Image (cartoon, rainbow, N blue to C red; front, side):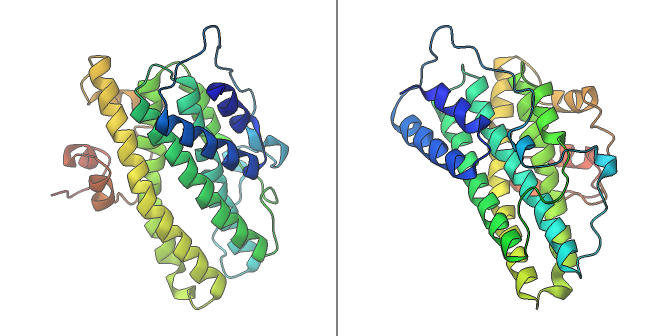
Length: 271
């Protein structure tokens, strides 16, 4: 079995069914076998995201603010934006195994498991989107997560800091706020389904961020770095001073963040 070639095919494919099949195959194999990198096999640099064939990619500033959830289109736009995040997370989890080949087998199993979760999340959101009369690709998207992945191609420590420990952790802050905004509309079946999906995603994303936290700390030891390098990395990528109106103290604590870190990220109280 050419493990890394299958991963490459999964990353490149824009078909979620193919991604799911190849991810499951790689996870099953990796759970039972030590993976060795084939000599001479060099990871590719992906110039465009796999969703480029489906989605119109625009600058973040050109995306409409999603505040009108009372209309079907407004709700679908919200569902689409969350589905896009989950889709991006699939490719980033797969890429983390494909690209960083000197990591322990446990690391590979962790991130293939994360990819499997993200595929399931995307599927739930896609089904809801279809029921609302839309498809993935009907709304424009930005490539921020793909770009973050490409900026950290050559540094696994930075990848763990930026992707799970920054972007996914930010989702722990935002997710409950979205549920709160939707709460007074939950009598609508589609809104109730979305809230149910968001609550499932929230619980599982805590585990994903915790996995990122574990491997970030592992790599800090490998590279002889203090864990406070996290904030130096955020500063290097111009992420340190981003406004965070809500910092989810409990969620971040469950995901491995210390109170010192949480306060530095903007929380007034952490005990």
